Length: 338
Ligand code: FUB
Image 1 (spheres, rainbow, N blue to C red):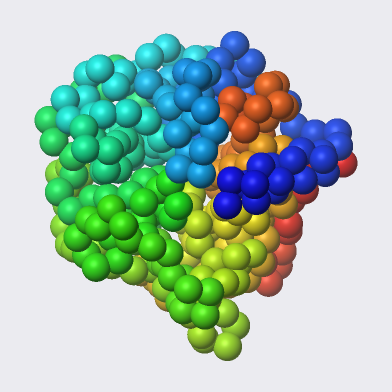
Image 2: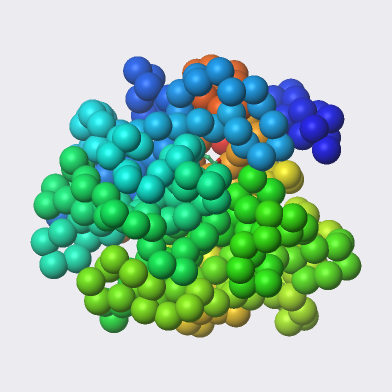
């Protein structure tokens, strides 16, 4: 597996040509950009990559992040401000290691930062922290969100005002350890001919601090209405859920992990099922591919990352480029290199 992991990383590096976009910042490494427009300003909630010396492994141990910095800009292409440390792992009472991809939401004067981190038993859980400012500092709740597990929380506000968290990630993201509903450290991935493990959704409670329901599977179907299989690894879900709504349709986009794509599937309500449609973003330099899709002043943008600054898979840099929907609602596939 490790050989496969390294080989695919190198293959992805080998494909790279001239990038279409520049890193948004270069003084720190940033990844997994969750972008939002709050009060007319663009805020990016990324992971903050660092070199901590942990060797690369299939569990993602080398992604050993310890805090979050929030970035903002007044407009696409404008000056980017780094607002400093918004939340430090030291100030999350239950956290063990690895602050991975976060997201944020705003409701009734409070900003909520949602984050995955391993607890002291090395099990990924989701936490939430609050602030009166979009850039923090954020204060973490004392316990993880009850009923949460795995990684990559992404919070979608529907047009009716309800908020939903999508989450999950296989391999190092531990989703395969929750197949039975409780944690099994020996939990394995599905066989290739079985349905792929599904990402999860849970409606958030009115106070935004807990799940209002038990997490449910988000079904991703092929065009014949059949659930995608685990062996269909250029289509099936791996990690990095994101939902945007365009012309009344719900677009669930996600990373395919070991095939390095951002794919999308569409549905008629936040719970799905979603039908696979195609590729949003082709592989980028580096092993991981993780994105967000947001509307800014009538245009749509894809925030993503690659490893242009470092050439190392665990030291990434966030970028942005325009995303276009065709008149039939399909998304024009983006290749990040010319
Ligand atoms: O940044 C750490 C992990 O890498 C994220 O949680 C995944 O989505 C992948 O980008």
